[in-house]
Length: 120
Length: 110
Image 1 (cartoon, rainbow over the protein chains, first blue to last red):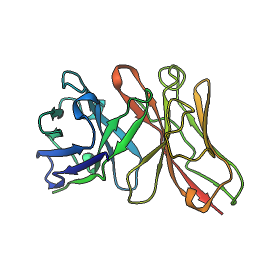
Image 2: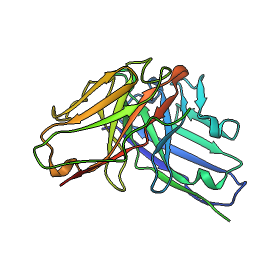
Image 3: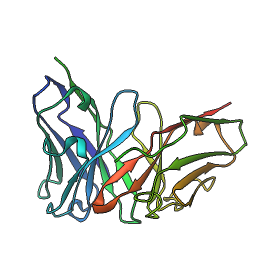
Image 4: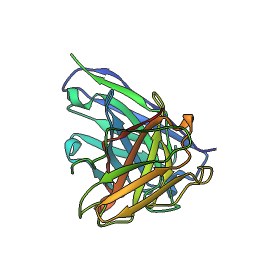
């Protein structure tokens, strides 16, 4: 059974940093692109970042480019999101998401999410 | 990249059909046949229900269907059921493995 379990969320002051983790199980982690998607309270979904299976390629939404860094440890089946220079508008639930291989747009498994609150 | 445009709400009675639109442009929905739809209940993670415009993952009922015409994709819920009351989001692939989501539509079953 595919499982994605996020951790590392919490309260952080503006300008601070936080590192999210996502523990993956039930599939060959290194075979899959992975994504981070966020959702501000009461708002819609926003794609944040992606990383290739072997970690050699990364992409970001413009609003986090230069502040967030996605990485992975395939020996520990874990995805990371290092978030620096955090702002109030980064407050959201952050979901770890697997990019399926059935098609070209199937983000097929989602974690339960971890809440990041940026506030003084 | 701006969010794809969806109507804020849609509704129907049990057994009826509801169609939700998702409008983008020539660099996303209009360019790629890589539109997906997600269902999200309050406080829960989204669930994939349609991918690549009109494909259904295993276990998703056939009453969920997708289509696309030009820059607009659509999700149709046929034979509406009480359990279909949820938020629905579209998404489109962009170049270089990036994605953009729609603004979301809340479906109510009257």
